[in-house]
Amino acid sequence: MIPVLYRYIFRELVSPFGVSLLFLTFVFVMTRIPDITNMVVNYNMGISAVFSLVLYSLPRFMEFTLPMSVMIAVLLTFMRMSGANEIIALKGGGMSIYRLLPPVAFFCTLMTLITLWVTVWAVPWGKHAFTVLGQEMARANINVALKERQFNTPFDNVMIYVSAIDIKTARLKDVFIEDGRDPDSVNITVAAQGALVSRPNEGIYTLTLENGIINQVSLDRSAAHQIQFDRYDINFDVGLPDHKQRIDKKDLDEMGIRELLTVARDGKQGAEKRHEARMELHEKLAIPFACLALGLLALPLGLQSLSARHAPGFGLALFFFMGYYMLLALGWSAGGSGGYPPGVAMWLPNCVMGGTAIYLIKQVAGERFFHMPHLFILRKRER
Image 1 (cartoon, helix red, strand yellow):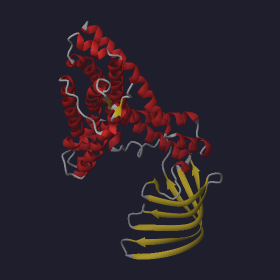
Image 2 (spheres, rainbow, N blue to C red; image 1 turned 180 degrees about the vertical axis):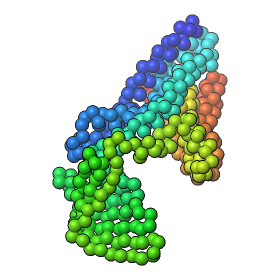
Image 3 (cartoon, rainbow, N blue to C red; image 1 turned 45 degrees about the vertical axis):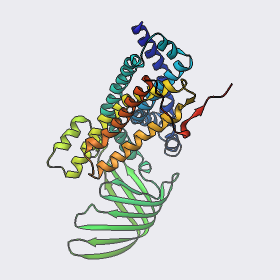
Image 4 (cartoon, one colour; image 1 turned 90 degrees about the horizontal axis):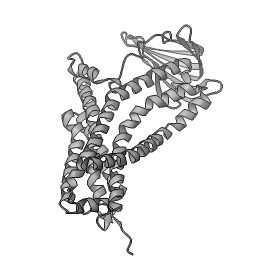
């Protein structure tokens, strides 16, 4: 009887998990629709390139949707079983609530391993591929990299601010440029108008400015000069398309476990950089275990939801889920400032949720139903 029951519970968990994962991932993808529409309509980008950008973003979305889908699947499964009096029938047959733990624990452990694969391999791959493709697209169309009313850094040691961009003519209005490519001087250029022309075969962009002023500050001689111009061209050498110098320089969130360990142990890196690498490493390992902590936490919520005269439902489950990520955000804030060790900051949310799950499971197993805050209570209708 026990193996049959375990297979039955496992099958019941798979269906709501799949539906929840698809729905939540779709919602996250929908947040990118405005950017995607802007790229397709205004920048003439191909559908294949846009599809690739969405594909590379999926692992980052799944890092959040997998734990939430596990929690929803366990909650819905045992709410349904409680509503159909299946839990009462099992108790009447002498079965303890603890006998329901193995299939749930197995399911949550399996999802933990899948999420671990996502955070350790898929997320760094997706982030790095997204960066590489974005840089290649920026080479083909620099308008993708330049944003209105923002400080843009599309080129090394160069900051560009543009108040307005005419997409059709690629004309720039009210241009401000800080050029620090020369280590001995800094050039501040202000122009009323400009245009950016690309020469992809040569790996060069030319920024043509009109009606402006150049303020040149010489650092070694402590001198300043001002030059007015009607037309002025600035060339930016970004290299040929196969140039990978900038592309291969990964950020911490684009690194795998081995790369993060190398940075964390590298004495040549600064203390802050090594600390950030340890934070990123612990985050990649800690987030997957949210599947286990939140999944086990959903078990007593689902068992009690219809066995008493009140039902916490999704309100309390959402409260715990948001509480987990609030603790994770606080951990990043405290750990990032050096106030707490990275291990404590990143693993504390799992410990809190896991401890809460153990407590609530013991309460339900002992028929000691816990009381919910009135905010999360849904009273059953009187007949």
